[in-house]
Image (cartoon, rainbow, N blue to C red; front, side, top):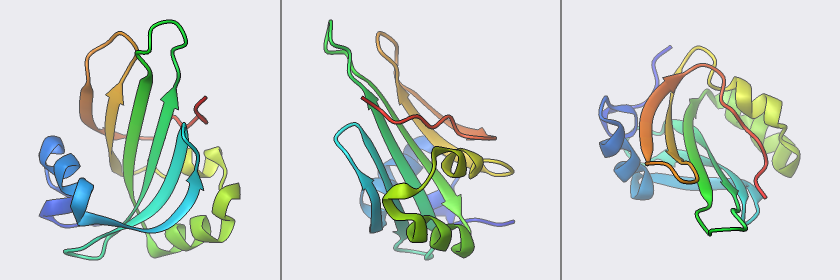
Length: 129
């Protein structure tokens, strides 16, 4: 299955992350919590839909809060299913979106360096706190 264009799904994860900040427009917010957010986004160049997942785990001792941001391309049917579920979209549904396709994973773990990679396989999705 082919996803996206060179801007939203190109080889360079840094360029794609930068593009996502303005080139992926939020079409639907599913979950909007300060520590856990899920949204459906659309590429302004090619129309590819994505689900973006933000998770933060508060570090009460040092303020070095772990933050994770995943962007995974979805089919129109998957986007529709997520939108229909709304704020009740399950973490298992979201986790399985990474199966069989790559997704952009931006990780800022507590006490560790920033990691930005294309990953393939199920996403690790937990609600933040």
